[in-house]
Length: 110
Image (cartoon, rainbow, N blue to C red; front, side):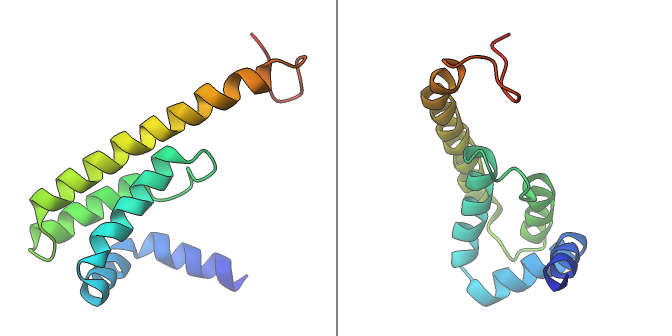
């Protein structure tokens, strides 16, 4: 139950948590943001990550001068493109393997 309340607090107060992350980790904050955006778009099982709201909050923090907006833009665009490419490659590899069997409860050929 404590994990659920922590996750809810993280989502509701994302701006405060991201600002603290930037102040505490400095340049590593860019790598953490890159990783979150990459994982949300690139790994099939992590679409629950707060990617869209994270982009707005990161933009706001960059606007007040705590992050370099140009570096942030380039890194997050690259993270989204690379993540999308990885997700496509996973689907291209696993798709035919999943659909070669008869129709199942979750996957239909149609």
